[in-house]
Image 1: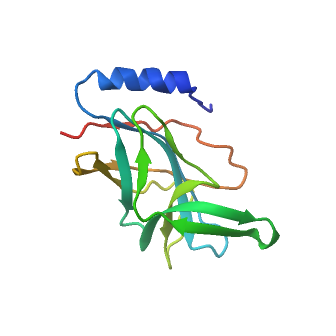
Image 2: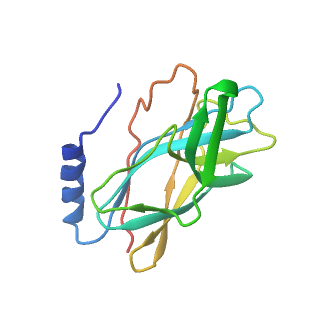
Image 3: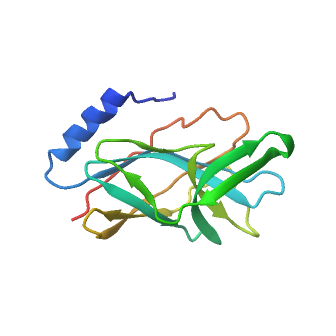
Amino acid sequence: MRTFFSSAALTAMLACLSSAGHAEVRVLNVWASTTEDQQNSASVYMTILSTTAITLVGAHTPAAKTTEILEVEEARTQGNEVVTRAIQDGIQIQPRQALDLRPSGYHVQLSNDSEPFKAGVKIPLTLQFKDSAGKEFSVLIQPEMLSRFGFQGPQIDRNITYAPR
């Protein structure tokens, strides 16, 4: 069953979170594409919510040789070419506003030279954030690799709540 949240539902969810008295981060609908054929990279997608202003500054996993936060600038249909740019200064997340990492937009790219990313495998992925005071913190998630062929989007919500102290 696919789950979609309206803006009102997301705002209500964050209003409940903010009553705890400290910042909280929620990571929803986490999934990752598998590597197909001769590809050596996979993409991780999710929705990130926070009760305060934060910046997504990086990501890391021991399952990949390199991990980058990228933005798709242009997708060309001829030759299946996709032009991306690395996000150097992070992505700002405003309080009570969802940041969607999705195909054809922002995403976390995992690259490997040898081991393919296969369907059904869960990998540890650490997201690195910085709050408005410059304090850094991280959130560990485990996206499941799902085949990009015939896939319509996240089938199960994987919700993680983190409250930096």
